[in-house]
Image (cartoon, rainbow, N blue to C red; front, side):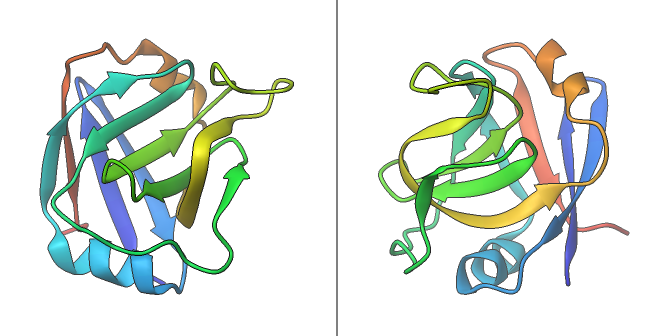
Length: 124
């Protein structure tokens, strides 16, 4: 299982990737940089990969999950409710490929500002 580092502003969080085609393709494309867009308690940013929806893609996600949104195409980090949530759990606008999960506390992501630079890298 691959690990990645997500760096934005003065934060750095680690995530572990699932054993999926989406996770493998994202890992091989690293490093990836982007500009943060906030949508409720979701960070998303455009990435230069065009991948298909996987069979288990879903809109109902869990806090800390990482998703690939083919319509973007975008890398999504879910850490709380979004504008389409039905309760306190995150919900994607439309189905996403879940390809990993943040390790540890996701509440620190609530301090990230819209328009910040974000960088995804492999651990050294």
